Amino acid sequence: MQKFVSWNVNGLRAIARKGFVDILKEINPDIMCLQEIKAEKEQLPKKIQNIDGYHAYFNSSQTRKGYSGTAIYTKEEPLSISHGLGNEKFDREGRIQFAEYDTFYLYNIYYPNGQSGPERLQYKLEFYDYFLEHAKQMMAENKPIVVCGDVNTAHYAIDLARPEENVNNSGFLPEERAWLDKFVESGLIDTFRIFNQEPDNYTYWDYKTKARDR
Image 1 (cartoon, helix red, strand yellow):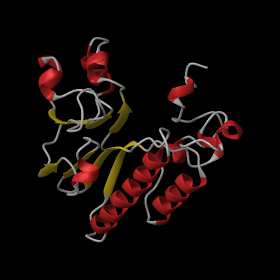
Image 2 (cartoon, one colour):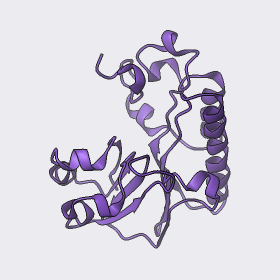
Image 3 (cartoon, one colour):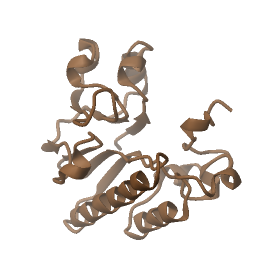
Image 4 (cartoon, one colour):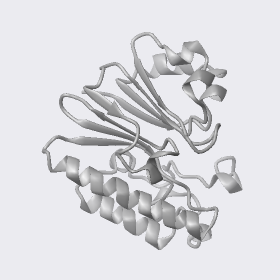
């Protein structure tokens, strides 16, 4: 059985100073997917670029430095890896990595946040559709897919601490949650919720209100 870890690090350089290499070694995943690395490869310490026992792949934003970005650390070298899925509109922010292994496909995705206004919310919803269309094509090839990432939406009330306060906020809007319905209907599974079915287990916090600190 393989061990996957998905983590929005909110800055890979910052956690590099807080013992990231030791954390990786302690957790010992087969694959670790990081989101919001906020750095280009050349800006990272060498100890982060090259970690014994892992192949490392970094995808940085082409729109501005210190923004977005994803990274994969994997013990097994993938057959192939791409940064993006072929549409510059959605690929240039460094949000998507797609890798093929012998027995599965892997997506590492930092989905957009829609809180900055209607235009960005629309971009987020289009991004969701862009990903799901590609995922369905891969599922048709009869090879399992694994999706790691920060979805930036809570699906159900159980998935966030204060659902009543967030019903009109991006991250818990009906149209965003409806897309997650499509996600499940396509055959994909929320593995976190399978293993964490009790209340007060969630991975979504509104960063603008510092909800995690509360």
